[in-house]
Length: 136
Image 1 (cartoon, one colour):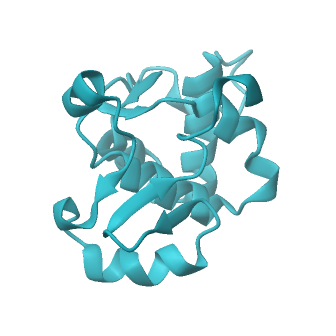
Image 2: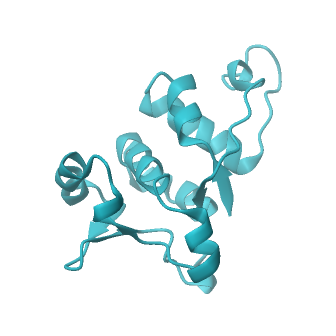
Image 3: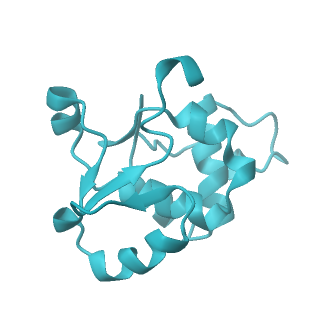
């Protein structure tokens, strides 16, 4: 499980989906910059730990080549709305559309996002959060 601070990632990256992906990769793999010329060097002093969570960030990262940086950024932003305490109590990885403050914008993006799915009960499903254990 990865705990991250979406707002800090978004702010530090200035909203760039490529930079968001670099930070996500750095945090997931516990990467440190090799030298001052390393692209991760500018993020060395930031702590991205927070209360947003992904259950299987490694699976998302492994399959990232199949998706756009925009889809991955939307996935991370949407996942950040979920409650970690609810997950720890019930192991629920879905998100009720009712809890999304920008639902009208997200619904349009869900249909085109290969990582998210909206079911008939208005639950948002995260593709790599519901991966069976033997598949990752």
